[in-house]
Length: 263
Image 1 (cartoon, one colour):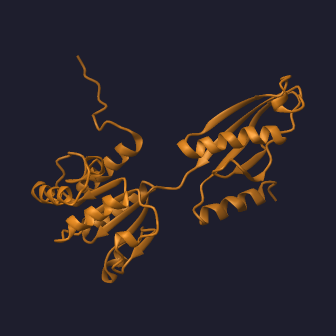
Image 2: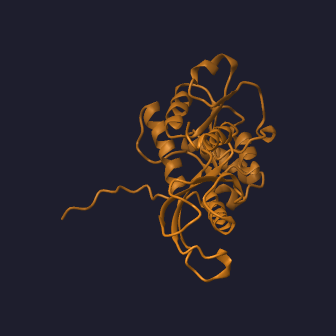
Image 3: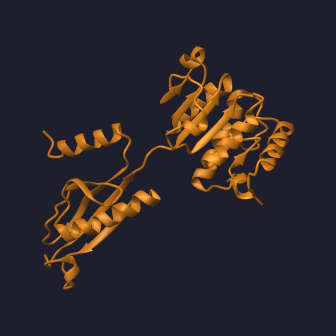
């Protein structure tokens, strides 16, 4: 039986409930230290230890504060703790030195697709491969077409009634109310509102949004025609251009080619 069995069971429970957490692991120790190599602990978003052990109270507080930071920016962090210090904030000097790695386990971004058809199906499949949590709102007759979706909504649930956070929203319905849905999505505060539309239809939607009080700041979150300019021809290529734009924004990329100029 693994000495970390209960810790792993806690991780499984947190994963099933979609609760973010950070794993702290002692990976190096020199001299005397209460924490030993291989010791692990789980911390929540507030920096509170959930389970496990990485050292005494002062060490735990230091690691907990770092875990809280890591769950804000999503970046792993290494902590070097000098236990040979005479400074009182680290408690009773142990005469050692330890290194701890803190790894945040963030929630996957939620991608809501509203629509039906080949493009929506391909978007769902490709986004799932990219580790997005994909939720699809479609008709009852179409729901079997989305086996990789985390959740499927088949009722007429309006955006204002959605009780879960949405990071990315794609409207691929081609309906006459796409302008109203776009407005509702922007007013709900969804960071990325993408509409699959022609340049002409985009202009009509933009005019509607401005007439209904959408600010310039809010329009920064409106993406239509959506996707990067790949001169895409097929549904697969269009889906690639849309997801490429989402990944670019997520990672702060430029969208430019990485190829170096050869002289």
